[in-house]
Length: 248
Image 1 (cartoon, rainbow, N blue to C red):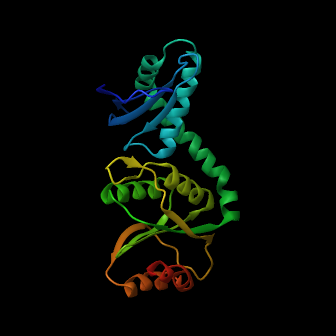
Image 2: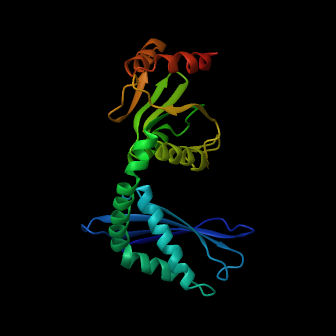
Image 3: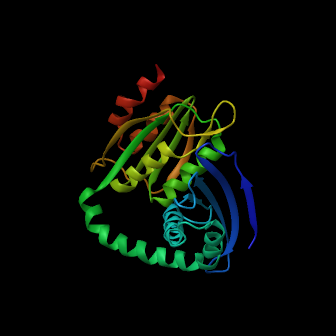
């Protein structure tokens, strides 16, 4: 179980550090967990804030790991706990993931009726720029995959559009991720949240709209090529209303 610890700059309201651990999962594959602990000034009388990320796990699984760690943290309140939490997740990760899959399958079964009533929704957003393009694109692709969303990430000149289709709750979840995650870098190269995002349209998919079968990243040389993408999907009106104004 390899570990890598890095102490970030101490803050006036506590201290933050990141640790990476490699854990064997159910099929004996290595899962690299990236854990971020923020210890408030009155730690351990107050629980730490915990963030969990992993390229090998879905976002839902990462959230379940975080919830389990916080449950364990409550058992150690008023005593140093970070080391114990790391040991615990190393020993129990496979069980957390297995339980997570069972719970989410049950939730999916229960939510089918709700999803059917809500129908499929569509989201069109405009991004001002991408400085760390390769990383940004990879992140958007992962979010779309984790949330079961289809559509397009479209580049045409300086125009950047994201068109998504899927369950309404997942569309909402995507927007939360887009607005709250550090997906890009600022002019100094420091990671930053997306502040230059515009939601152009969020609406229910109509019968005349074509359903995208996958999420794809595409680049277009001309406005005509971009327009044809929208027309093929039955979204001519959407294009006419929202895209030409972006050129002004």
